[in-house]
Length: 429
Image (cartoon, rainbow, N blue to C red):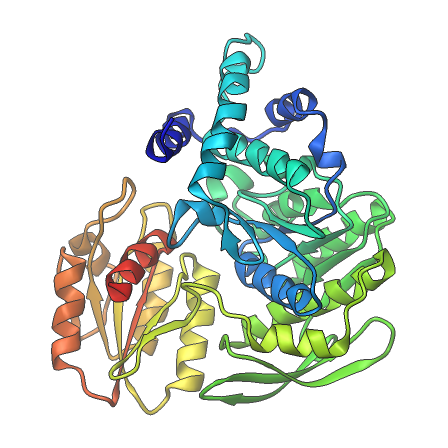
């Protein structure tokens, strides 16, 4: 089997759609010798901020000398990113080996009458557990795919759980209220296992806290003024203090990823890392500072060009767009701001675009090759921006902006992580 054949087989599982539930992954785990019970893990759920929080944790632990595995989605640059060690994706050869182990089991599972075919995410999750069982690391940080309660990663038995901010996304699967979505995310909380959760809407926070109390899980809420204090924004990033559970403070921490929401994500990672000390992970304050300062995450307010400044941001839901607009207004108030926007059809497009109308001087709507992407002309109907325009070819749209922009202009590309993945390849080339 070649690498291309292996990845093609994985992607063929997409035809089985999204299949919430744990029965199929539990079947895989039993066949593989219960790897989920052997792996030291931190489990992360949430609507926005999972990838950034994973990155902060990984860099902090790496700064202390630990080997850290990560399981994330979706990928930005290469499929191999899904399973990484110390930020380095596993090799093509290792993906081939994983498919050779999991494919026969998948075919056996598919033949059952009660369980049926596994989804793409289920087979990748099974591969992740098998990989880190056969390639042990000091800690694995595991990100949920969708929701939490019925997500296939939820068979893990973690040292800690983290819940990032809650927003209205994937409502067709998780429910159409903050409370319903918080209930699904809180499904990763385990009896007696500490949970650190980001401050979110009052109703969502209440659901998470009540679940923690029910399961006697120590609960740590992260919110501004309670657990962190913003100090200063600069062109390079954010400065802030963190108040730790033991009453200690870490002052003047720095992150290069911009925005108040990133301070919340970083604080989640800091408190989680401090709690890991009780689990035998010796992490110094100096490693926390170093790890935070060197953290960067592809497609999260990522600068890919200096003159003009071009920012890629994977905001793909209402809360993500709100955070993006606030960050742009905070850091680029004197710039003339231009947006390149493309999105998928299962998002609250009207509300997302209304926020963009208020922040950006011009909006260029475009589209890209993806099953659920929306034509630029349809997106533009939601906008009241007097300087809106349409170009169905995103490469032409960006090249046109770059030709006419000056150093006083800011270009932001957003709307979908899948779109950002394509644009990032273009700028890297």
